[in-house]
Amino acid sequence: MSTLSELYITMENLRKLNLPIDERLKQEAAKLEEDLIRTEILPEMYVPNVFNNYSTEI
Image (cartoon, rainbow, N blue to C red; front, side, top):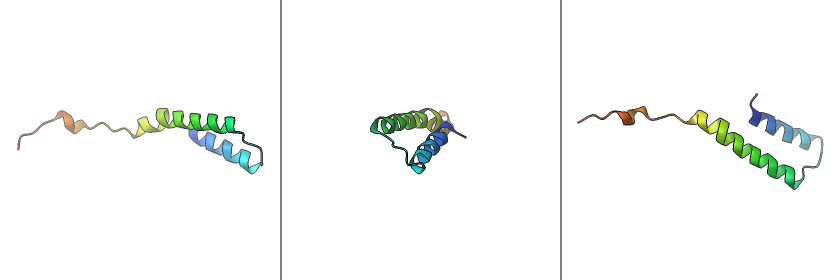
């Protein structure tokens, strides 16, 4: 399971248990979410364009 999934599950479990989620926790979770997307998700989505290295004359 990815860390991002664990974050989402943890926040959902807190809500299901009716535990208070204060503003500081929401902010920290949002920051962690952003960091995880930037470091884990986006790099996996990047596909270099290998065709830019080749030129053909038409």
